[in-house]
Image (cartoon, rainbow, N blue to C red; front, side, top):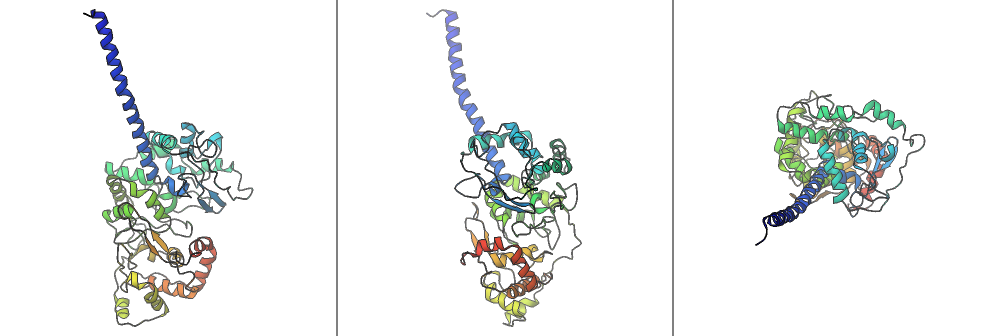
Length: 443
């Protein structure tokens, strides 16, 4: 019979072996959960929309950003040690996200939305760090060189810009933790104002390029609509009736973010990428939190007369009467999908009657959709990608102006007219984005 002391040592050895056997899988599970959390946050932060130009090289950078100072190209953020962030420490990574400071103290341009990312928690920054270093494949690919002329190419002035306009991480975190009416609204605010950085596009910027407000408590210009991005006008996300989301329900917003379409509108431009790479991957609880925040924390900013449907144009078209050249072009080119009553066949083809994009003070997005066309992204919950053809090679400036004016002034939309000179000037300012689509007439 084994001596008692030896029995105890043997038992302890067995217990140690068993505990080590459980410890390894537990640690692996813990690490995998961090990677999964980081992947989810990368979707919430829409990292791929900026840092993936080639779909076969995820996060390898290369997307161009045309800014007043020149053209920037998003960097490679894969863990490649030469071209990516493989040599970054976690502190380097956090500094880039929260302070706009790259490795070795190199200031980043504010195309990187670090004033929003500064609101992110330590736990979320850590999860992102783990994901980008252990869950992303390294890609040895250098993005194009930025096209910024001297002296704007000097980085040191960004240190002064950051000091003047960007909140410190401490200030941003304190603001992110401010009081809300419910935990759900607080979560929505965190996602919208933090990782989602919605204000980077949907809030106006000053001439010095900073967002005029970074959160709903700072100013009512927050998310009231931004400056053009690649020719598109980011829409007003506040509760304005005609030009905002005042007539959208919480479920409308959730459906739009999950599928890129709903009964009131469809995604276009950069928002298509934001949904395809980002919001479609969020869970229902987070989508509802975002929608609840938008509905309760962003009251209407403008004193707008509520939109009311006017059927007079519909009745005229039903009688096969075409009151002007714009109506003729509309019937010939648009009515098959958007109908003579302007209601479309939503969610496949969006309505034009009462559409906030149509009634926006700036008709740029509507002009660009006619010239360039648009595509609604395919998503997991709505796998069909729907495309509107481009008409830049088909319609003259006058014809575009006529049909855009007809759409903006029919069915109760009552927006301002557009002239051929407006369209001509728009083509000149946005030729890069228009030609990108119309080089293929079938696009």
